[in-house]
Image 1 (cartoon, rainbow, N blue to C red):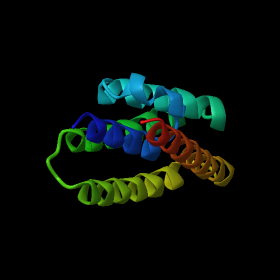
Image 2 (image 1 turned 45 degrees about the vertical axis):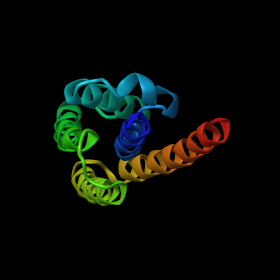
Image 3 (image 1 turned 120 degrees about the horizontal axis):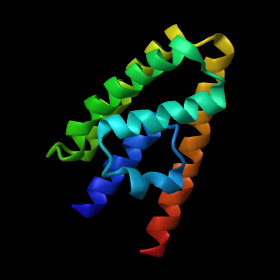
Amino acid sequence: MKSIKFLISAICLFFMFQVQAQSVEKLKDKTPEERAKIQTEKMVEKLAIEGDLEMQVYAINLKYAEAIEPLKDSEDSKVSKFQKLKSLSEDKNAEMEKVLTEDQFMAYLKMQEDMTKELKQNFRARRSSN
């Protein structure tokens, strides 16, 4: 059960991407509000987000952090959870694309790609050490 919660936390963070992969353990017990704040701060830093846009990005991050929260303790299968998370990620990306500039959105997608690679490497390393 603990590994399932870790997996869900990792997937949640993957889709919310802005945090470093090493922070998965630290963030799994954070509230949606705390996670949204951390994610927004990371995006402000990496994507040069300012002013009203920062509030819009925070609102989107919070919306999806709250949507993901029930999946952490869900009894659904891993496949079902993954499908729901993927759908939420696609919806979030569509919302981010509407508020970010083209350059910011491309950088956002690059951050997601980098996070995916890092999470996969960490997951493999964790599995091989068990």
